Image (cartoon, rainbow, N blue to C red; front, side, top):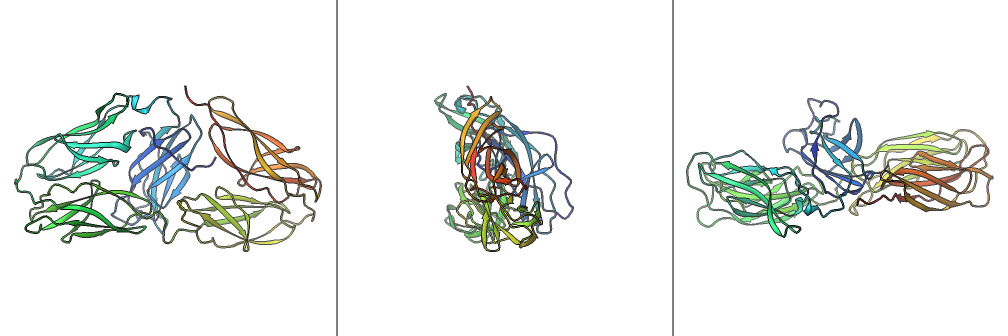
Length: 483
């Protein structure tokens, strides 16, 4: 099963279980892991603390198995319809030191068939921390309909947010404030609260510095975002505090700052507050969303390439990529010989006893191009007969019918090409995995409902040698929609 696109629809639920313990020299554990479940997809997002060793990449676990790697703070996985999954995430540095896992999150791939606004999810709680006489940090779990929430403090709107945290300033000392998240409910045709809480500020001075204004994004790279703002009128404040959500990312006496140690294609929401000499915070600027550049300047290349000769005509390849990819290209020398969807391939139709030098590149999402090629691996096919069957053609999906809620019957058909050794059968591969065999030019398979696959077919002769594989065929199994 291949794991790609995702749509956030339901809130995550904490579950027990985690991968192995962390190395003491490892990066800090990722924070605030959230999961959105779609009908055939899971989307994960998390935050990485900016202290300690910098993580080079992140690993997503389902149980003890790594199911995704990412060099940003999100991952998308394709899953079967009507299936439940539980994930954790770790951070890994350049030396391979791995952090402790996050708390697990779980979700079920399903759609209710009802307008999500008409459902009644459990109300969420807003938690206040780092409370001073003038400011507080707020956080809350991700809401199923998180795209359009309005934050209100003391009945005053602070604007809309897609985040799960915020820093607020300019508060009065020794005062209790109500805190709530609201959204317009189209089913009820009114604005309703979806999360609430309260906070009481500490005792202290009533003096507050004037607030800065006009916060803007002045530039970005794949690892930095440049911010600038307008100073308040009158005397300059002692310093400014820059927050990403509720996380302090910079203090400066300037009206501009570059926030670093970020990850490509990651989303942030910045605010700025002025500080007086006592550290009291002004009202914050309006939140400004910003994202780093989607393409890495130096993307990782595939590593750990292995090549195993399994017959006189075939070699099995596998490798690891520490980021997301839409597909891969396998090169024999400088000649492309396979374009698998995942990090494995079966290269077939090779000459007996022939030597090959394989390398792999990955095609990156967001039109970010290809990675550098992997290190080359040499392999020699096994000795055997020289004849090969002709390459099959026109691999096509001719059947795609649900068998129920959990499974689907798909039928693949292809054309037998003339020439070469007579074919006695066919093998259908998914990556380097044998999905099935056939004696005719058609095969039916039972797969998980809504799952995604990429198949190739090869012809096999009486000696067991394989032809060159067909062009790959991408398939998504259908599923029965919910009532």
